[in-house]
Length: 232
Image 1 (tube, rainbow, N blue to C red):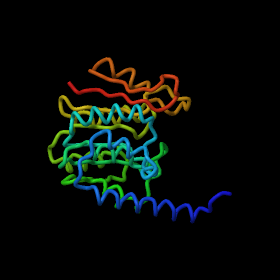
Image 2: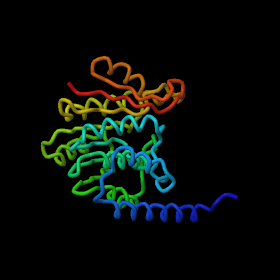
Image 3: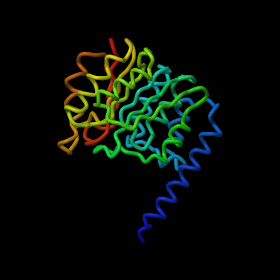
Image 4: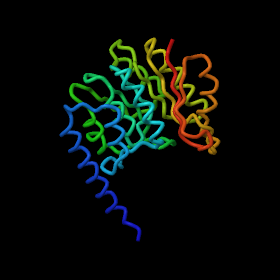
């Protein structure tokens, strides 16, 4: 029997309330990559589990744990799983900014009541800023630079507009803000059956010009896949 929408919404809100309680309780604890992945792909975190294969996320988490980024910018918040992961392996005083387009065509647009939940991901002295706007808009870019206050980005995660033109625009706009030695990560680099999802086309053009890594469980999986480049 199908659960009525209003009951489903109540259960979801209760689930997020329990999740926020866990965040508040563990705010000052260390979260190595393994603990982060174990939690993120567990029942208590099912509301924020990322749309991604665990094997691929584990490899990315290991890379971020080595980097310990001070400044994180994420384009595409979705259900918050990748933001949570970044907060756990980032520096204790990191700045994390997540940009998401309300009612975006690629899974974006979380409701405002989730804002306190996502803010609760901040650990120790971290600061999280949630930008509910279009990453392609000039004012979004300018406001981001103000928030950075001249600090370069250590880790840029691009998972917003999945069209070729859209992901290319995000890369060209935001990559100049990433420091030398910093990393840019693309989601959905595997060839996708949906013709509007063309991240793989840009990825195949870009990767040969950089030191790069690919985290793909199976190249025939027709979804997901993570590509990482390191800025020169």
